[in-house]
Amino acid sequence: MFKLMIVEDEPIIRLGLKHYFSWEELEVHSIIEAENGKDGLALALREKPDLVITDIRMPEMDGLQMIEQIRVTLPGTLFIILTGFNDFEYAQRAIRAGGVHAFLLKPLEYEESLATIKDGMEILKQKRHEQQSLSILETEMKQSSKLRGSELVKLLLEDEHAEVDESMIGELCEWKCDSYVYQPFALTWLPLLEAHTQPSSWGRQQAEAFLSDAAQTLFPCPIPRHILTYAYKTKLYGMIALPANNASEIEVSIAGSIQDQLEPMLISAGNKHQTSLFMALGKLTSDLSQMNKLLHQTDKALYERFYEAGRCVFLADRLGDASLSTKAALIQLDENDRKRIVACLESGNKLETELLMQRLAHAVLSKTSSASYEKALAYLQELISVTIRFAHKNGIHIEGVYSEKLLNLTFVDDFPTLEALFEWLGRWMVHLGLVYTEGLTQHHQQDVIIFEHIESFIKQNIDQEITLQMVADRFFYNPSYLSRLFKRKLDKNYMRFVTEIRIQFAQECLRKPDYLITDVCTMCGYKSYKHFVKTFRSITNMTPTDYRKQSGW
Image (cartoon, rainbow, N blue to C red; front, side, top):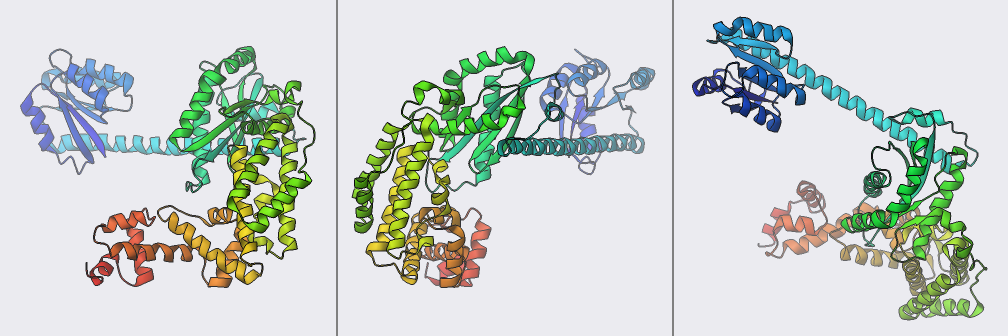
């Protein structure tokens, strides 16, 4: 659909033009009008019409002057001029000079005028098609460039012997220079709420949007830059390519921007999306062969968040500082703490377990630092091993009390603080203790009770999207095993299990006249009313409206 502007100082002619042709059939959806060139110029710059039909001779500013000024800002606008016989030669010269498509001779002859306008509309359609095709091509090129950039960062991150030539960077950048410097970074996003239901792609999009703003802050114009990223789970790795001749200016800019600008930006973005955002910056380098090492150092710097509460931007080169590595002595779980862990598992006492985990978290913080972070990981591995040995010894079905995240320690990446991490470990131990104290060491008993816990968890978060992965993480199950468990024990998949709980809750709500059906839809976690009705019917063989009527309301 197109927008038309009519510029004519005679009101009756403007009115006639608006009704002389069937504009809707010509795909014109909006008509605006002005009574002179000056008003027409202001209106065009504000409304951006696709087609302008204008008289030549008008007060304050004539039509050709107006056209000349509009074309500077709106080069894609098509112009047709209205002219009387006395101005006919003038109009022809204007067309030959360019910028005007055609003219309509007053008084208008319908068929001839319609043909002229139709011809103009075809040109506009062709232009729009070309613009759309160009836009699609540009989008595809950007996506291709982004994908190639992602593959490059992935290669540099995973292969320490990767050979990358600077010409590859030059192919990806929108600007060229003789040599580049590279700013490595790592960014992670962690939901503030445990039942956070946004997909991982959402977090990545927010991180990429923040990164674009951060790059603008770190490297303000006129410094050109190109960002290359690789997303893995809840982390965004990458580097910012910059011209080498700006290296000294770039270093000064980074040093002056972190505390004053990046920190507040991260906090603001995190609060907006109920997410904790943390960013680490590596050492600026011109040597791509060092990028593997620098990216891993930058990734490690993200764990400084465990040791520096309140901060969310970290510099990787600080990790090698001698002042930060004085606490690097090996720490171990002493025998008394081992016994306390086993005692908590045997009793299933939630309070005692929480207090023990708080004390152990403080012990790790006091005996390690970000420079000796591996020692903290070893300590966690030891704590988990004690707990798993207890499960083995007491015949507890292992797949029902741990997820792979526990064994490979990747769960560490899911927490903003070490205290939150140990709190989660405490909940795992309480869960295992419950299995032990209730005598559910046999597979059948242990597996049956988990469905009751999952149902209770879903009901508590009935208005949220609760994925299988979230449930597996919440109850420390391997998601693949849990999925098989639903099919084997209940003869239904997880989605059917959740749907039945939601619809059962919907039935309870529908029996209460205070709730509108649309409210019930939202309360049960459905974003689409149409989908809610379809699902309700598939379970109950009737619509929500029919069910409510049947219930007497």
